[in-house]
Image 1 (tube, rainbow, N blue to C red):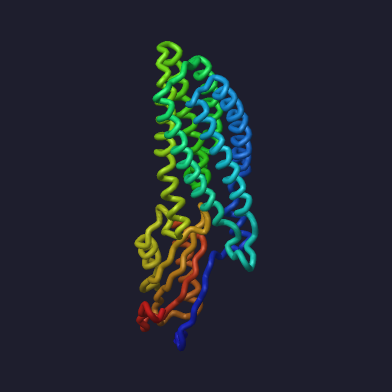
Image 2: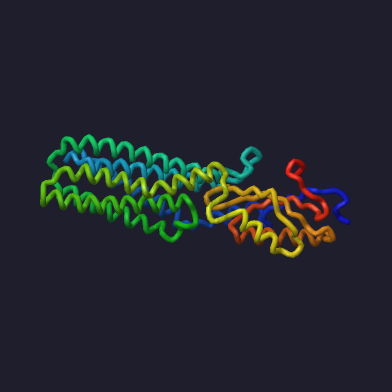
Length: 316
């Protein structure tokens, strides 16, 4: 018997670390260009919108400018996280800096929540004392923002489900486009009706749109920061995939967490039939790895146990 004494066998992807980085960061160059273009265009619009808002005393434009500035910072941080994630692992940071992609997504969500509070407060104050506003100017400035944000959001559309930071950028820009569209409508209404309180009402609407789009991002990034099981993967799915493999009797002590917004890791014990040779076990391990990769688990560490031994929680 090969299990004269129990041994721990560690297994990871058959890829080398360099291969892992290459496959993970096959995030195409267009994504990097999308971030850089989005940052440049949105920062330019922030300047235009802030100047216009200050000049005509429009809270909705100023609120949207502040929101857009937060989005520029969010895009810059997301780009920085992508760059840091490419750094090679070290003896101190054995996974490299991949986790920064999760922390940046969490930070972006928190910043947006803070901006909601500031916008809401200013809108309530403005309701009590609405000022005359040039609706036509508001509509024209907002229309520029709608075009810029809508266009840059499209840059991230195809990749948005592949990475939480890309999804974050997409949601930021899409919500900005929607908000700008609302401000365009509001500006037109102000121009024809002189209902100046609409400016404050639009600010509250902006805050609600941001909250709606941010809440899910906050939950996902917070869960991943706490090493929760990543979305779209369950422990039950892992068990079913592993135990379908011939020779695997059981898989338990499963720990599953996110290394980054695109890569996941797992540790577990697998019970293998005790009549298996060392070569059989290596084949079984490879099949388990392949099954886990189909579940979007790229890095696995497995401890192999013989069938005749019962693994109690305290002793494993």
